[in-house]
Image 1 (spheres, rainbow, N blue to C red):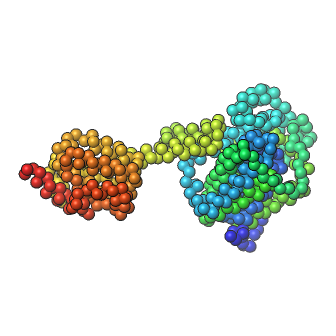
Image 2 (cartoon, rainbow, N blue to C red):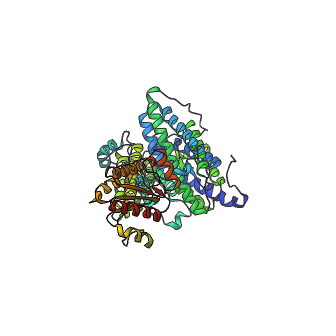
Length: 548
């Protein structure tokens, strides 16, 4: 695998500018995510450095900038709460999650991850945004981040909000106002998060000294954190590693699509997963937060001129320089300032596009989004996604089965909707009421199989037909359940002592029906390639039955 895909001297100036600006934007976010996770500001900075560097070196989206993100931080915060006495277990989950991402990339499934239904993504991201806002409400007013579940935090908030630390509240509101209301022309010169960080820190030093601050930050290169694993914690660690791997993969590949649209390029999904996995594994090894492709930082990088992976790597190296040289300055950053920045991040993560159209959107999609959002906030992240996927799959099967059922036609004569040609209709005409043609157009699956049989059973006067023509010529594919439904149709014809004639069948359909032994139920000479031949045969059989 070649390192630093797409690097070119042609884009060097743009990459240099993009990397610098992306690092400026990433610094306050990395510190804020570190504090929010419970691992400390330095863990956020470590995560931004290692994930940002290795994802750029080995990833498959040249202009993407990676680092800690809101969703990944929320998962990590939950892990650190569970393993508060042994943080090494939480970082073991990060390392394992990175390894799983590498395996996903090597197995070639990267291109499938973005197939997740939009309502599930929408509900999940809105839930993550709500969690960030809820968790940052306490530090926004000068109190420590509350440990425990989101529900427990919600229960603790009222008394905390009623007794704010006024200095912290002033800085938090000011920070939130800056990141929310900075004019675009000013934001192009200095990113709003950095402006809020500088202004809030200066005011904290000289005007609002009572506001709690980050505190001591190491200024040396981190030492490895040896992975740990206990037998009683294996299930939790593996489960959360899977969550981190899937969440980081989805987050990164969605950002890759954004980068593709902006740069008119095409990313390598599997290579991107390998790069993200390496970055997360190394970050976990050094006590850093897990990360993913960061949309806002990537967009800023591209708009500033970044086009190759050099910009992402440069952003990480600049953050490393900050770590080694400016740590003492970062110690005086008020926590309320970081909380204000993160509240804006949470608001931006919420899918307002979907919420604006919630009254006009399909009810099924809105239901899925609401269920996933509620479960993300109140229950469990992986359970929320799992339930959302099951709901989306069931509703999709229902929609497809309804469409397949509409493609079942029971024809006894020529009608405006009939697929019969004039010649076929002329053959069928004299035997109307004696010959019935069952025409199925389109795929047959388990969703519609039983409903098709029930519909045939509900046809009034079915026993009066002497010949049944089953036309499968335009069925491109059939699954095992639908094939057994075809057998039920044939058995129903036999039970009424009717003649059965089969029409057509594509190779894939024939293979399934033969494999299940269903074609053996069709009498010899009663299978025709064309519908016209089948109808001529049916007419002869109907005429013979009348003469008897």
